[in-house]
Image (tube, rainbow, N blue to C red; front, side, top):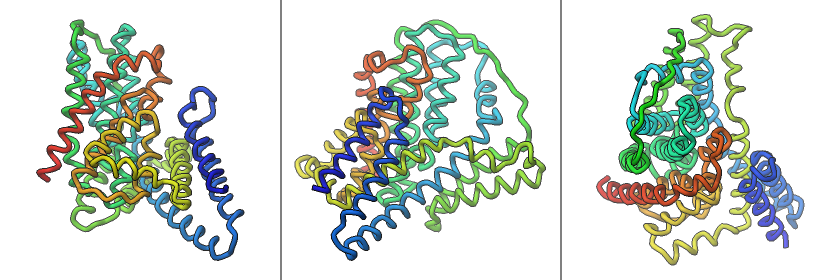
Length: 413
């Protein structure tokens, strides 16, 4: 009976995530509530002290996994929050753009920028910056929709090849299913898929756009901190490949260098303390991950995730992973990926890379399927579920081509 109640709590949490825009309650609050309640119920209704000890052991393991993910994201998001607040990202973006550009070229420029930037920053920040660029163009609504659809797909695609870009990629990496070098290969097929979608969306676009130049003077210290951020990413990659240094350790070290550097060069005072930039990161996103991973850990504890294995028992991973990617458009990819990892499915490297791409990009097929889609829908007037769905066929084509290229390339790794 308890197991059914706990599964019911998980389903209620999932419903809260899906219908967040309807009930107007942040999904982080819902998942955190049901995630903690489910474990509390496990402790209360366990029949013996020995069983509670087992539950406590699994809870501690679950929290240890979550803490590594959390600390890494806090460090990475603090870097991006600082650079974004200082206007460095927006300034560099506008300096790279000409005063006048054709709509078609601008579409490709937006695709490339969103793809590259989302590899370095979290999806939400990358989407916010890209959407701000779109809205500054004052395009007709129908063309704004095309840019919005492209941004969602490009942001999700860019994040799959680096652990700094997408949480599901980071989760699969932390589970030792792929290496950082393996993931870097994903950037090529993911980029090709983005260009294919951009080419499809550019059909019929022939006008020109004047860009409002919004340049802002950037201090040398902000450039230096941007260099520290990029150096941290490179050190994380090479440190893990050469010496197996955990990425969370590298990023925390880089964050500490940023703090000390700001202090030495008098950029850390009572009016603008450097530590305060931790406040600007999306803690609601972090709390959502915490709640989801608690729920998935609970479901693993009661052996409720075994149903996911059914698909893999009846279909080869080639097709099962493709379907999981499409499923992530309706079910948030974070709980879906966490659940798949907890089932301990056995697959070869090409299949794991295929799954990484599928769950990272598949959420783009519907506007509610990813954080990038939700943010775009909340910021761009007129972007609704129905209007976005008109482009689902083009998105499916780009997703399918990217997935096929991943599997083709993975066989040569």
